[in-house]
Image (tube, rainbow, N blue to C red):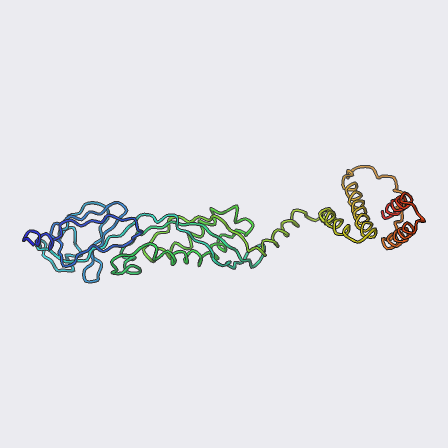
Length: 347
């Protein structure tokens, strides 16, 4: 090795860091046994900061720009090393670079439902997820609280802690926002802003700034969502329980008739058809009454309703008629006519 190579190896004239895109937040400049030359140039790029550390103590901090390292530009380090104002010899000191660019599209979400107190429903368990962005703003605090003197520290290593901060304050954000659960979906921006406000101090304690928080979705567990759907349905109905029962009957009619129609023989058909006709008649009367104008003149007294036979009686009679038909006493036409007449009496 030549004398020139030896000297170049021992003294460092240029200090800089080019990020590699692997999510590194803090990187220690490799010194080995080298020393920094007096008057060396320090290049700190945009979205970076540099920190000199002397015997474990943070000294000078540099922002973006080109810096010449002298006693004037290293006042704290000069004081710690007791340098004269015109020191001319190389010196040793640890140099750390920090990335201050935004760490965007960081995901957060509830792995398990979070229990909160809601103004409308009392205690509810909800799920939520979104993303957030943050940046390193205070390298002194970050080095002291998080990265220490490690050669390299990445964003992935602190991601779980930061997501934990957001989930920890989720209940606080809901409570302080005062927004009921039913309105959260329509006020996602306001809720996200509240979540950012209550969580930001935790980030600041580590030398970080929570830049943005977004809420992409908020929902209840499936079993609670079903109850909520029923409550919403009742709210849409209002106080008219009669209309609700008519609606329920209309929804159940096809299924009821189908099940009843699967019964054995004539009795099953009669029950299915009779029940369907009875429900249809009830709904028709209710709809006719609902469509009458409130200010219309009273209608003439309705005729006395026809007394309908009980389904048990209809079924018994039909079974007897079927027996007569089987013995040849009644023809098919006679049996069909009697069957039709009896079914009409169900209503």
